[in-house]
Amino acid sequence: KDHDEFIDESLNGEFPSWVTSKDRRLLESSVGDVKANVVVAKDGSGKFKTVVEAVASAPDNGKTRYVIYVKRGIYKEKVDIGSKKTNVMLVGDGMDATIITGSLNVIDGTGTFQSATVAAVGDGFIAQDIGFQNTAGPQKHQAVALRV
Image (cartoon, rainbow, N blue to C red; front, side, top):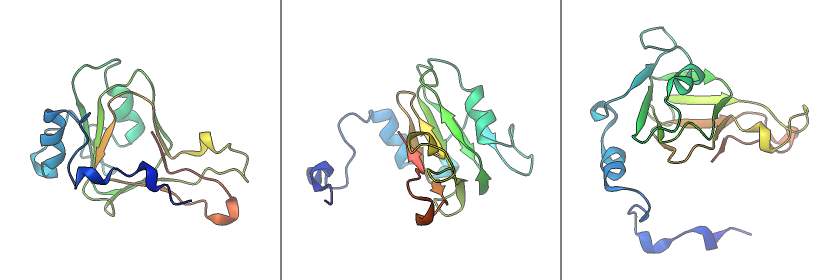
């Protein structure tokens, strides 16, 4: 089945009604115009070298948007944005330039649900210009890149 029932064609490229006007403006901005709370850079030029560290720095039960800018690069991590980490936004330099990748999978002993490279449970999670991968491949059976 192709899951067409989940596609809202009435949006016509617009945002769903649950996206706030502030978040719409944020998502329509270019990366250079987004003011980040913290920066992640593998080369050490940011406050953190890993996405996991940056997520941990987000306030628990945050009421305002917490923007984590992840500079260009491939980040081999398992990122869990827990239920207390609310209103987190990950921003990268493009879905092919900033990639969070992992390879957890069923065959190697990780359940499908837990195989997610990035799992965002906290309310209000959004992402822009960033790629999420699970490189386990079909021979490893089920594997998840992003679970929201």
